[in-house]
Structures are given as structure tokens and as C-alpha cells.
Image (cartoon, rainbow, N blue to C red):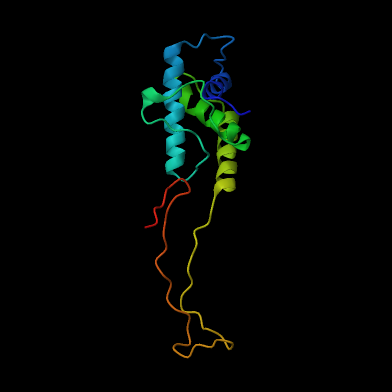
Length: 156
């Protein structure tokens, strides 16, 4: 079973030295952190890092105990990068080790989800086995259809 949004937030606070067993994280602090988590994941989604995180329609619709539905290999990147975002709001300075680990973790996620764009090659000769006598070159490419993996297409 994966992490809930609350668990990501508690782990991030633990990373900056504000673990819940030392500091009481009240409801307002948790809600602000939840909004930061949701906005970070929305930003990642906009950058093409789609991990399956359930983005709320509005900040008031988000639930702390909702499962985050992200793959396990992305947990460390979410925790560390959330800690980096939460620390300044509490007057904390993130350690260089945490910054390095956060950068390394997000680079690992990027490497895992990176998809090179498809390219259509133009101007190639047909070759000796071609049966077409119209042109010695392959036809020009058609326009590609761009849609993200979470987009819907309607066929009429």
C-alpha cells in the first residue's frame, strides 16, 4: 500500500527537523503543507512528470488521508522536494545533503518518465526494392497528434 498525502507531509517535516513526535503539527500547518504538496505535484504534472497523483479541483477539495497513488520509486523525490519547499516557511535551512538528495531523486524520476519525442524523417530515398515510380523519395510526414497520457481523445 502506498503513502497517503499526510504521510508525505509528515516525512517532509521530519526531514527538516520538525517531526510530529517533537513538534505538534496542527491542522492549519498540515493544510498549508497539503496545498504546497498539491501545487508541487501540479507543477510536476505540467512539466510532464505524471505520476498518477490525484490533483484536486480546488485547494479545499484535497484530503490529507487520501492515498497519493504514486509509484514507490517516486516517494523519495516527493518527500525531499516537499521538504525543500516547506523549510523556508518555517524559518528552517535545508542541509546541503538534503538539497543534493532532492536533486538526485528528481533527476531519477525524470530519467524514468522521460520519453523522447517522436520524429518523422523526411527526404529519405525509397531504396532499390521500392515498387513506386512516382518519386524516388519517401512521402512527406503527416501532422502528428499530440496528447498527453492523461488526455482523452474522441473519435467521431
